[in-house]
Image 1 (tube, helix red, strand yellow):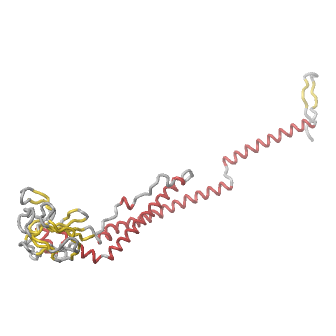
Image 2 (image 1 turned 45 degrees about the horizontal axis):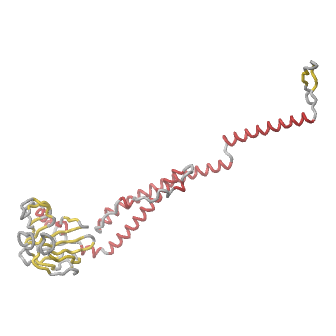
Image 3 (image 1 turned 180 degrees about the vertical axis):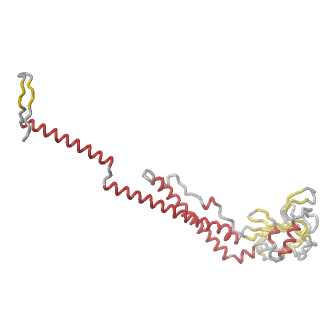
Length: 323
C-alpha cells in the first residue's frame, strides 16, 4: 500500500492531502526514467573508462603477443648478425686475401637504405618505434646477406681463375741472379746517384753487363715500350691483371712490342744504361692498384727461405741507388 502524502496550504493554514492524478504520475515516471538513464549513462562511461571490453582485452592480448614476438625476432636477428659478422671477417681476412682481392669496405657492407620516408607507413601506432627498428634491422641484414652473396660469387670466380692468377702475379727476379750478387739497391730512402740527396727509391736495382736478358716476372700484356717517361730511359711496362703492373727501366733494347702478351720467364728486353742511370742495370718496380710497393715481396718463385732472408737484408741497406 502506497503512503499518503500531504502538503501545507498557507491560505487555509492546514495540511491537505496530495491527490495523485494522471499528470502527477506522468511527471513522476518522467523523473524516474530520466534519473535512471542518467545513472546508466554514468555507469557506462565509467565502465568504458576503467574497464576493458572483451574486444579490447583481446586486442591488448594480441598487441602484447606481437611485442613479445618482435622481442624474440630481435634476439634471433642478434644471433644472425653474429654469424654474418663472422662470415664477413673470414671473407675479408681469409678468402679474399688468398686470392689477392681487396676486402669489401664496411661502408658498403653496412650501408643503409635510401629514402627518408621509407618507414613512414609504420608511424602512428602504439609500438611504432619497435616495429620501425626491427624492420630497419631486417632490411640491413638482408642487404648484408646480398653483399656477402655477391662477394662469394667473386671468390668463386677467383678460385676458378686461381691458376691464371698465380701465373700472372710477379714472382721472380727480372734478371738472372742465382748468387744474389746483382742486387745493388732496394726499395726505400736512398742516395740519388746524380743529386747526392736522400730520395725515395721506388724499386730495386739489379746490376748486370749491357745486353743481359731481362725477364717478364709474370704473365701479362706489354702496355708500354718506349723512352718517353722522365728518367727511365728505354723502359717496358707490363699489365699482369688483378691490379698488378711491373716496370723495367734503363734498357739497352726491347725484345717485345706494345700489345704483345708475354709469359713469366720470357725475355722482354736487355740491360742497358739509358735515362738517368749511373751504370748498366735494370730498375724494377711492382705496382698494385696504382701504388708502388716493395718488389722484394715478389721473389717467392725462385728464392729459398734462406736466400729470401739474405735478399731482404741486402735490400734494406741505405746505399746509393743506380738511378
